[in-house]
Image (tube, rainbow, N blue to C red; front, side, top):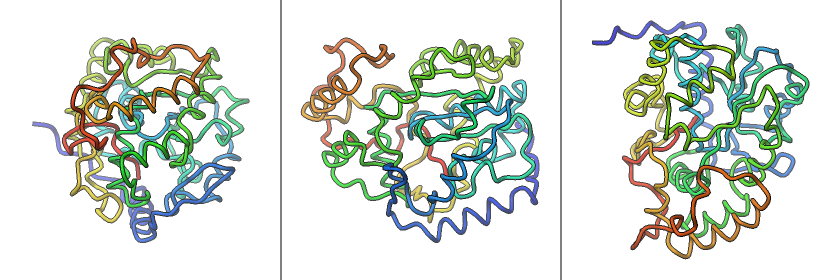
Length: 338
């Protein structure tokens, strides 16, 4: 039996409790635009994004950057374990959003006192809005990509339970909004195309959800190498075991069960569902798949091949697909962040 979780540091925890409570009471499902990009009211503000843009960066900072629903919290779990040499006590005693706070959130990472070094921080910001000081620093960015078809399915479902997001409407309408970039954090295409320009720089690692799914052990080794934090085999195996889907789903500090229903309505589905790739094929109609592929081919022309760029004959949806791209509650994707 596992040891009981270490008691939370009350002084460090209280601001989060207060902030989450206040946020829960001020969610409207409305968005605001900041330099052309949509953000949900209540979780973010023009001021909080501006602070993120203009904050100072330390050379040992580690940033996890993703488009929403691309595996952010999986990467947080992996890095939390790597930074503790495989020891799971931190991930079992501190909520995931406190281990890697969000740069652009109202209670943003840069405004939090007494963060341990190296600071681990998360962001969904497109490159043009990201912290300017990073680009003249030695701080590291891990950018995690994911098949945008799986992203849109997950985001559709998430939009039904996250109180800060607008109702997604019909699957067809949501897909159109996604392809136009009229969703939180803007266009998936612009996001990945912006950040992929950093490839080749020493302090930038591009990795995909699909690569982690295919070979988590090798992916963790690659991340360790990038961070300059090699692990022995026992520690490496602990990282792999404790960041696996089943382990995260069972960990109350990582499965978001600590959040109130007023922020995330868990009665309509668990955060961690299936933990697989390619489930979009069970949800896209043929027409939706064809519409997506047309835009994808146009917007991604000239970019390198990604793991999800398979043979077109294999890329279509399964026969007799559901017209609703919303996964069932037991299907998995990246859990939401507060």
